[in-house]
Image 1: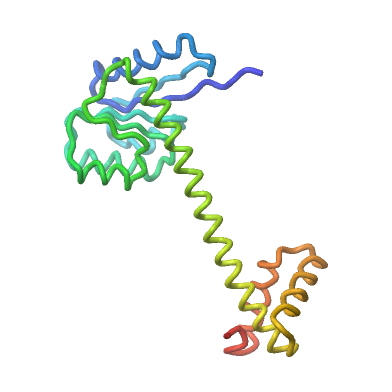
Image 2: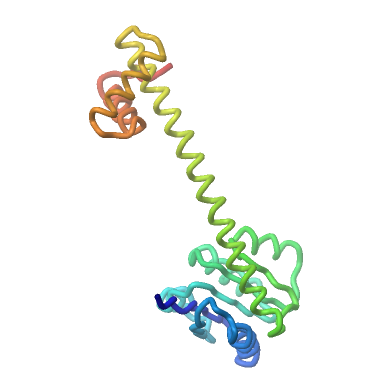
Length: 207
């Protein structure tokens, strides 16, 4: 089975510096078994978000040399919107800018590190960090969803307990059995019950 090329986008207005990045990628991938690289370039920052979307890269390498605050914010916006592994190269920085890069979701923020010998290792770290962060975000989303499900199920149990005059355990058993019979998730059934109770009268879903 042929492995798809890794599509890498280099965002750099400076052709010489962009060439250093590409040389580092090409040289390191020459003996790599992980597939070929498909390298694209953006050298004009106008409409950069739309142009990135058109390329649809797997990884974005941004080289800013000595960026202004406005340019940095534009690139941080790219990071927030693109949802791709992003490595950002700058010649100098400060702690506030580093923190802003982290907040924006930049996977690797490299200060004074534009050497072709380092490009492949930085690429690997960028991809690894992005996927690790993505897993954490997914786990956090699942935890929040589970908490919301638990809260809505507790509300539904309270409604059943009030209507049936039964215990909490019996109310849960009834909800679970009904959900199974209807081939639904218990949380979905609970949401329907709470919504119906809210329509029928205020306070039915309160503890």
